[in-house]
Image (cartoon, rainbow, N blue to C red; front, side):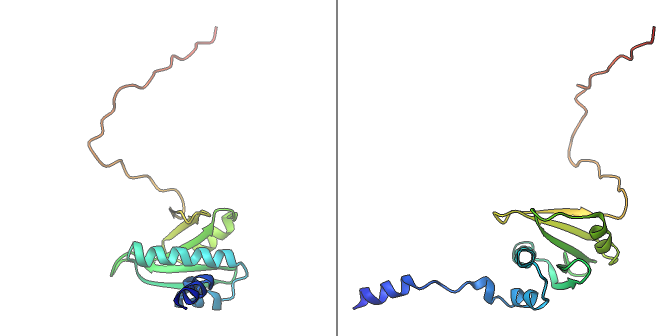
Length: 152
């Protein structure tokens, strides 16, 4: 009898915890048309809250872009960042980046691959000079110098 009960337990599919998670339910209630973008936003939400330990993570609907945006603080007292979760197969326009930047918060674009790999890219309004590399780096002097050709 125990074997039959065990087989019955195995044959039943376990409930999908993602669909039951309160944050996923809240994202679904925002009624964004693209279910793939909602799933992507939830994966980024989980990364920010469980892995990176960001604070005050919340979701907001962008009616103009029809996406779920995340707002969060990297740590207590730091400024709020807007995170745009995006599946890698979805295209992105300058207008949509401009719309998110115009919210007034620093922006992170998070591309999510089909294997759940997340890549964050900080977006800025205009060009920003990059920070010099950290560490004891020196120029190895291997640069090749090209001679300019003189016109005959």
